[in-house]
Length: 288
Image (cartoon, rainbow, N blue to C red; front, side, top):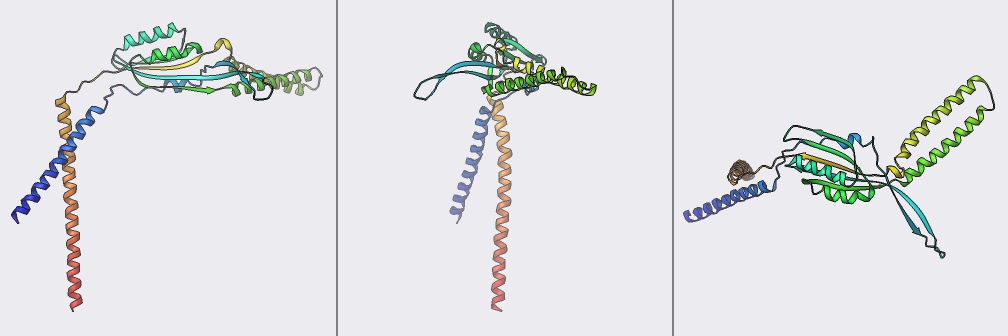
């Protein structure tokens, strides 16, 4: 009986030790995979100015028809292309200077700029307009500045939007011409004033359309690069500290598991004991 008890006790101790070591190894490895980030969250700079500035570019190409008589159609595509780059730097001044040199090298323009924070926690946000032919080269250079946290390129077709703006402009110009012609036919003063007010409204709408269409002009063609540079410090954690943290976490979780296991076992024992008592009571009642 004692040999069986000792054997079971050894087996239980072995299982408990294995569980403890497994928890410790898991937490120790997790400490290496978890990255420490001392930088602040990026400000929503680009979201705040997204509606105030749009950069568009165009691409001209031909599409061959599938008819028996082969013809080609010239297509003038208007599109919006945006690159988003988020980088972290431990040499903020140097890498900010490198970024500005790259922007100048590819004849790009800084359209909006925000720089904030104190030494050690500085942030730089740049909205850059770059000629379409230099977009890829600038993007490839900027993603080598600092340690990249995130990057992506988005391209949206704006051809239909451009055509709709032109169609709306043509329609408003026709209405304006018709109203001006009505003015020459005379009429009551209040009718004349209404015509003047309506013409003024159309003029204002045409001015707004002119601004929107101006973004599509060939001379204003740009693609967009949203570049964020955050200053952060690298933290080197010693092995002793990692062992200490892993050991503290393991002991805490291990004790919680032991306590939970104890109460579950106690509950199961009491539950089985209650069932046994009910069976005995049932047998006594049946004998009577």
